[in-house]
Image (cartoon, rainbow, N blue to C red; front, side):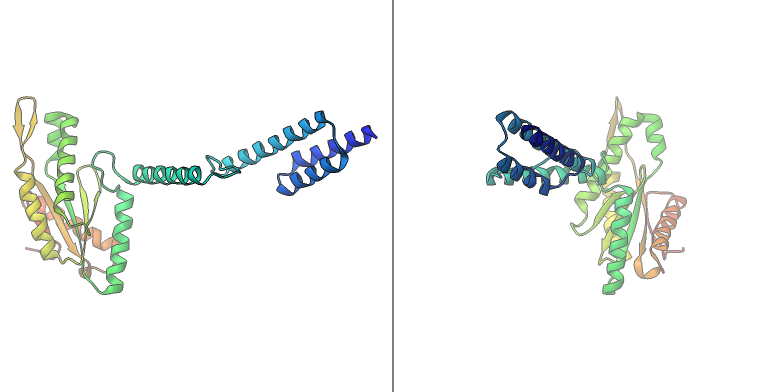
Length: 260
């Protein structure tokens, strides 16, 4: 009789090892209660249940899980665990979408936000402007004062833009020393007024490298959404306006419809 129970028990173990399903645990517990297993066999059953749970956790981790909440659930512990995970998720999202030097949105994220705002402006028949500020002759800054000082210049302009723009405006680092500003419900004329104010403020900032003191300037191009036929042209026209600002001597803001 004991041999029969052992054979049956081994069969249950094989089933449990080959299939991860809660129903098998219940079946095994019913079998234990019915068969009257010895203490040693009960220990082996408990070990098997632990193996089952470990395998379930491994399977969960392979699909993206990184932690587990087990019964019995304590309310305070559950709330603290979920809160901590939410905070870590937000921090991770920030690291993934924000530029480490400036704290601004990275290129893919600012392009995505621009797309959303462009579509919204089209639905609402409202106006939207995009601006592309770019630090003038930035390569000379890196060549003459080293990259660490160049990083200070980049971060300084980012700070001035972030502080000077509205909370509804969206700001990102588009390239090395180039930025992209999305300005909802703002026409190109008013966008230019704001950007010119920030341009003047940035030009007044003095930077220091060893015993040398220097200043920098910024140029920018602006385009208004109802002047173009699509998102790609929207960015392209702002970029062309920036190029004209550089051609005209730098340190100025040019609108896309300004062909003079």
